Length: 84
Image 1: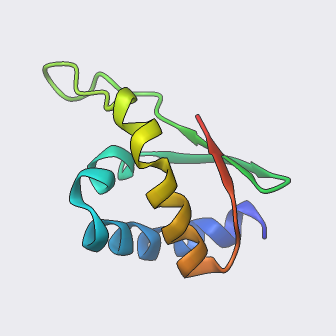
Image 2: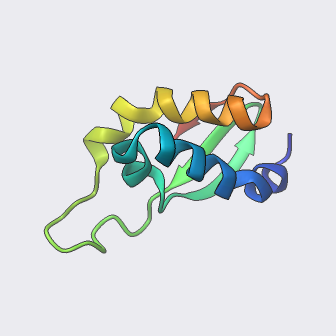
């Protein structure tokens, strides 16, 4: 799978994530898909302070990453590791 393939399916991933867990969706909806190499997806959260009050969701990323991985597999059939 190429990064462009995942980008073309990313909205579908996000819709499925939101229907499964709204807080997980809030954690990842603004992630930029930075790179995909050797089944390692790197997400970019380069603007974590854009929400007033410092809602960066940094602690939630670890908690909800397994759900995101499951949804990516459900949509794409690919098992990916996720980093940021």
